[in-house]
Length: 117
Length: 109
Image 1 (tube, each protein chain N blue to C red):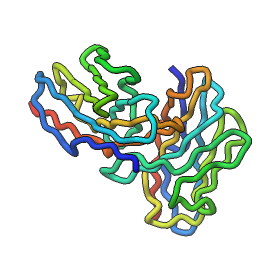
Image 2 (cartoon, rainbow over the protein chains, first blue to last red):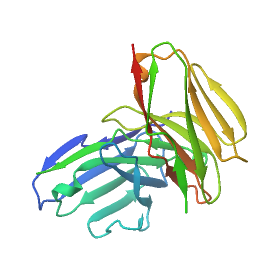
Image 3 (cartoon, chains in turn red, blue):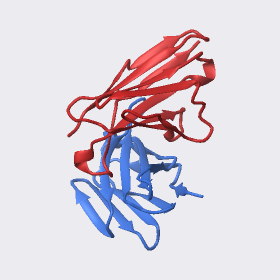
Image 4 (cartoon, rainbow over the protein chains, first blue to last red):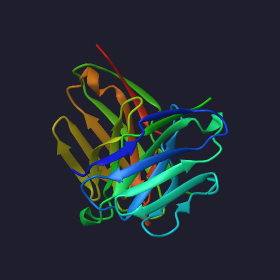
């Protein structure tokens, strides 16, 4: 099956700094990537949908100036958490859609655990 | 609005069978997914149903009734490693995944 990687797998940063998380599709070209956030004991919450070469579509309540998404190539999307605060500490998961598999299939990355101190 | 309901937590015994239910109300329907998620890890795909009926895959089976907005995941011959959260998700008319809150399954010896 298709493989999606994320880097880093975990990161600790100080409040006020920015953190970049990478999501890569390793063996397919992903025209669409999704960014999710998951707080402890809660389900996944879609943050934004990222389409290659265009601006990301953010879900209601997600600050686009705080969570910068760049999908510059068909195999890479990045999420930058700017001026991070402790409440941004969460598990961030990306997924990618392989157009050759049809619109129903999403492949998930292993997730990135962000801790802001 | 869109809504997916599944029990918060279930407990079962090793070797037994457990059924996790999921009901949904969404704007459009392009299929229903079940994912398994161990603590601290990303979800892993278990099943996808788009037509009514039962799909069997080894120890796991998934059922769908579109008219009732209902699905269940059936796990047989439970093993300790099956202790995890099980997430029900529906693909809506925009091909966006709408997620349930997940069911935490606890397996006891």
